[in-house]
Every structure is written in structure tokens, then in C-alpha cells.
Figure 1 (cartoon, chains in turn green, blue):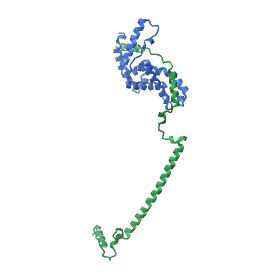
Figure 2: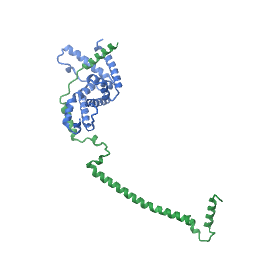
Figure 3: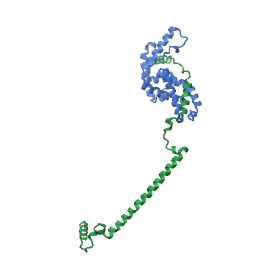
Figure 4: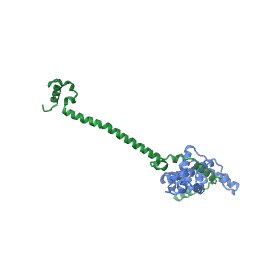
Length: 138
Length: 171
């Protein structure tokens, strides 16, 4: 049975192989080379569009890369300087506010305009009441 | 190929002269039309030229070429079903007597028609195996499938062809 199958496969193979094919057309290589030369003269978009992470290191793009890097560095430096100027007065303001709160709680709470009428002023009384209520010991 | 990658068109011409037969025969046997086969074979070789800069000799060039031609042929039939339209009676051989020529012409036509009824993957496996003499592994590499898949494709193709061509096979 196996031998019969093998023989049948060989026959089939011989039959398939017996079908001729025409030779390579005349001028095939010449036409192909003409197309190849034409392609060589025109830029190929596929190879140009390839992304290269180190492409900026190429000599023709180095100047552009350096200019971009310098602009970026200058921008960052300016940003840091402006940030420092903006941040410093805030720190100073915060420190001054803390010192003022410790020294004079009435002035710090914005009730200073109610003072100046003696020890039993409305502001002093209010602060006395609120500080007493918030004190867990009393 | 490395020289082609550096833009040497003379080296590319040498590659064409050496491999044009393979490219042409695969395309023709698979597509069955001279004009389309020439277009596809040329496109395959031009694709190889375009990719020459990126080519790495990790396998035989022949295997690489078969892969490119196979892909283009299969892509082509996905867009359009091929048909064996060429009259190849003149290719059968001038020495054959008229009755023999008629018989062989009929037989060749039957084989071509039978091949044309196969699914594209099966037909390509048959072309690469029986006309180009590739091994199962080489066919698998060219078609980007597993060797087991190639065996299955060939087995199904043989079964279908044996049924279609039973009149031409000896009992």
C-alpha cells in the first residue's frame, strides 16, 4: 500500500515537472537594469524616511543640532533664573509672616484695627475666647 | 550583495544575470502569465536592490530571493486571481510529431488548469517543491510558515492534483 502511494506520488511529480515553461523573456535583464538606473537617479523616499536617533550627529546636521541644543540650554537657564526670582520673595514673605504671628497674634490675624482701646478691646476678648476654647486642657 | 548595498549597479547586474531564471520561473509558474510574471519578477529584484543597504547575509541569497518573489506573487493574487492564459503549445518541443504534440499539449493544459484550481499557498508550495526543487525547510522560510504547514499544504495539493489528473496517471 505504502509502495503504491509512493509510486503514485512519483508519477504525479513527473507529470507536474513535465510541463514546460517559456524561457526568460528577451531583454529582461536590460529592462530591469534600466529601471534600476532610473531608481538610482531619483531619491528613494523609503530610505530617507527611516528614523535615526543619532541622525543629528551626522556632519551635515550637526550645526542644526548644536543650534537647537544651545537654544534649549539658554531657555532652561532663563527659566531657572526667573523661577528663583519668583520663589525668593515668597520665602521671605512666609518667614516674615511666621515671625509676625509669633510676636503679635492680633496683628497677624488682621484684627489690629480693633486694638488701641485698652486691654479689654473687642479683638483681645475675641482672641482670648477662641484661644481658651481651642485649648484642650481647659 | 554587499557591493550592491554600496551602490554598485554592476554587481546588481551580475545578481540579475545569475538569478533572473529563478525569479522568472517562480513568477511564471505561479501566475501563468508572461507579462504579469515579468512585472512581478522585476519588482522582486528591484525590491532587493532597494533593500540592499539593509541586507545581512544571514542565509543563502537564493532563499532570500525566493522569499521576496513568493511574497510578491501571493500579494498579487490576493488582489487578482491568476489564470493560465498563455498558449504554450510552441514550447512543447519542435521534434514532437503532430499526434504526440497534441497529446502533450492536452496534458500540459490539464496540469496547468489543475494547478490553477489550487489555493495560492498550495500552488506556491508545489511550484517551489517540484519546479525549483526546494526542501521543506527552504519552502517554509520562503513562505514564512512552519515546515509542518508546508507538509500539509503539499499533501492537500497532491490529493487535489491526483484527483484532477487521474486520467493522466497510470493505474
